[in-house]
Image (spheres, rainbow, N blue to C red):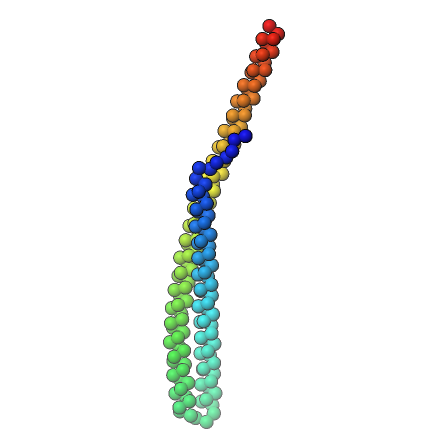
Length: 151
C-alpha cells in the first residue's frame, strides 16, 4: 500500500513549535502578572499596617516626631502603590498581547491540521480508487482468460 506523505508537514511542525513557544510565553506573562499582583497586595497590607500604626500613635501620648514619621512612611508607600499599579497594568497588557499571539498560533496550527486531514482524505480516496481499478482489471483479466479457455 502507498504511504501518505503530507508535503507541508514541515510547516505544520513549525506551527506546532511556534504554538508551544507562545504557550510558554503566555505562561511566563501570567507568572509575571501574578508576581506583580502579589507585590501590590503586600504594599496594600503594608499601607494598612502603617495606617493602623498611625491611629495607635495618635491615641497614645502625642509624639509629633512619630506622627510625622508615620505620615512620611505612609506617603512613601502610597507612591510605591501608584508605581506598582502601573506595573500591574503593564503586566496585564503584556499578558493580553501574549494571549492574542498564542490564540493566533493555535488558529494557524489548526488550519494546517485541517489541510493535512483533507490531504489524507484525498489520499485515501485515491488509494481506494486505485484499488477498485486494480480489482476491475483483475476481474476483467480473469473473465477474459476464462472466455478464451472456453472458446
